[in-house]
Image (cartoon, rainbow, N blue to C red; front, side, top):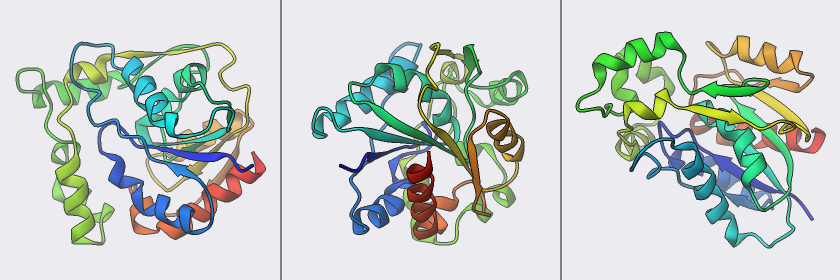
Length: 231
């Protein structure tokens, strides 16, 4: 039986960033889940256990014993180790899509010091604006080709607390005991793709901006199937 694709969106945006790819995977006969992480920023830190809970709860729709392929975009990549350790379903493979990489051991900061320095002044009463509001229009516009898609993604975004980006996510020993791969869209993720290659992972390149899965969902779906088949 084929592994179930579990498309995990960045907590900075929402599940609609994966819906077009999910549609193409489903049309090709694959099983797909797109868990929502939109409410993990409520309550007190740390937030990573809520990410695990949200994905595990969503997978209750998947028969026990079915394997899953984790597909993590952007900073969702940092949660793959705790997902691998915390899910009830066996993980057949993990694909990091234009994603941040967890530390090899120990714990991973969600945001490096220079990003926290940038984010601090943006927070109002400890809560940040939506992710696309962090940047100038010149940075945001190239990620979108369809105004309707942009509107959906922008309106869906959460306003996360600054403390979300201040948390450190555990890296359980042996989390990468399954095949991992990396799908690069473009800058500034080339160094992370190179690090993935240095870890012995397969790396593929589908040129585009950071939300390229919404621009070319068919091409993204094909690459995911290819990487899942060879991991």
